[in-house]
Amino acid sequence: MFTKEMLTEQFNQVVISKDEDSGKDIVPLSGSEDSKVNAEQTVRKQSKRKNENTEKRPMKKKKELQWKREDCAQPVGKVIKFTGTGLKKKGHYKKFEFRGIKYELEDSVLMKAESANQKPYTAIIKDIYIIGKEGYVKLVVQWFYRPEDVEEEYLGKWESKDARDLFYSFHRDEVFAESVKHGFRAG
Image (cartoon, rainbow, N blue to C red; front, side, top):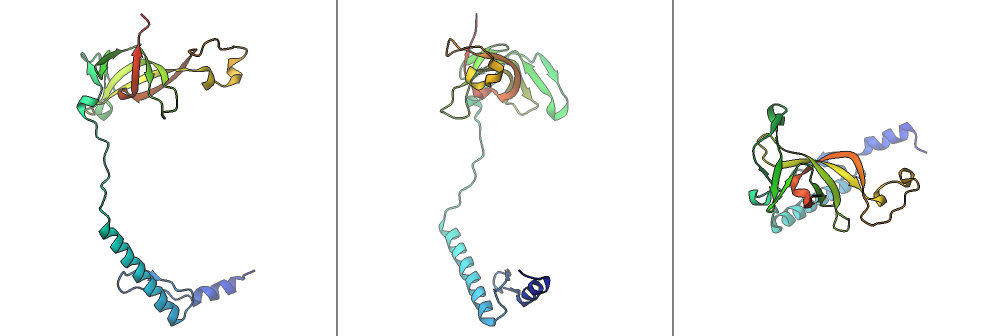
């Protein structure tokens, strides 16, 4: 076991110096001049390799998510009401159009799942709006759940007789209108 004095002594033996080329601290494992020289050479070699690798590789620029207007949902009709103020001012609509299909309030829709191996989600459109000058249509949707998504304790003795069974819920979320996969009406 190390004592405080032993650790202090070892710490005091460490010599910290600056590399002349890079200006970085060099901390050799012992206070000898040989280890100091070796450490300086190692740092120089590493920085030289790093510079060479950087110069050879083409720089990849981060691509920003760019939505083209023709790929985005568009509101249909006039604004029915405004809520909020300033940057959070929302313009609410009765309908929107996406990929040539019009959707309106209270339509049931299938929503894209988070991964390809999942079934699409089902929801009812409760609100259609655009925030400020952002221009992207957003929805408030109220979710339906499949029996396999509900914990058994809430199902009780209920047994599913059809793979298309859904449970109505009061859970609501805001989503982009572009997450709508397909819509259908009951009437």
